[in-house]
Image (cartoon, one colour):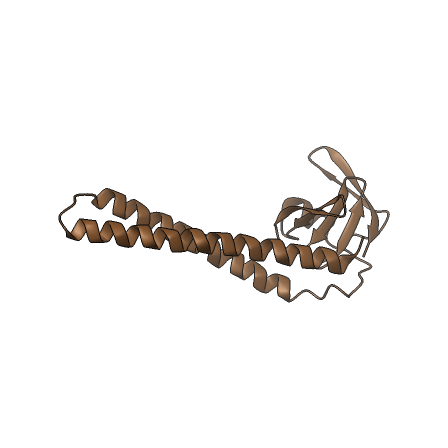
Length: 149
């Protein structure tokens, strides 16, 4: 497993999510402007306009959260090897591969699934600071650390 590939795939997936949300946001701004024009022309759809604005705020918040995650991800140097699990570690366990970076979920690379998790997530908190051959119990199951990159 190549950590640089995982890093680039994580960054690419994150950028894709940001771009998708920005397209939705731009579309919603166009729809809201159209509704605003109708409303000022006497059309009584204030509720629809208000709901469109709420949706825009929600999407804007999601974009801003993803941009913060991107900022955190860009601070990771994927060429650094780790002896203990921490931010930037790629970890093989008996449950699969985990990339300690941002909470992005499953990423498919070369027919393997890697889970990009935040070190502050419940499982992440248990694993941070651990070394090879250590294990933790999470949700009644034991997770054994086999390799740290």
